[in-house]
Image 1 (cartoon, one colour):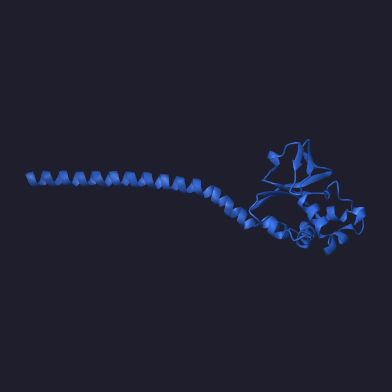
Image 2 (tube, one colour; image 1 turned 45 degrees about the horizontal axis):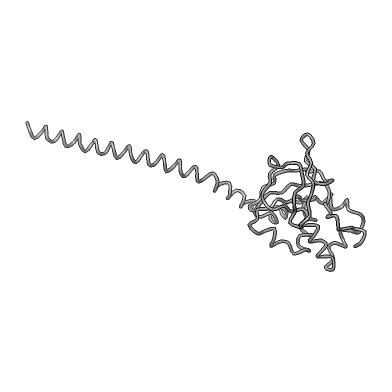
Length: 193
């Protein structure tokens, strides 16, 4: 009789252990999964944006930015805009470039005007990732060195005289806001080209 009881005691004890182990492994599973999920979200976002590629990749994948991409190539800015950044790029659409006075774009793409083109393009780039909900009216310094003036009117955001058309196009190293006009630094006069 005693044997049986003893055995039952052992069985219970081991069941208890299993149960405890079950619990603890459950809870570690849960914390692991919770931790994994917590980790997964930022990294999932990163992987999403890295799927999106760099600002240059994203622009290259968008037909509206083909002129901009050609200009970035001509100005040798691919590396800058593929660097870690993060950068905020106010990206003129093809229509914005077409709105420049006749012949200006062609001139800008010529090798002798590379520095001017670089100034113009870096005037569209701000250090840091500024999404539309962070945009505040005021002057913002660009990578070119001078400032652009951001104004908001209702839901519209203006950068100098250009209107933001599509905000928050995500890239792995920043964000792109497409605009409907090319921004020109004060010291750049297309007529001088």
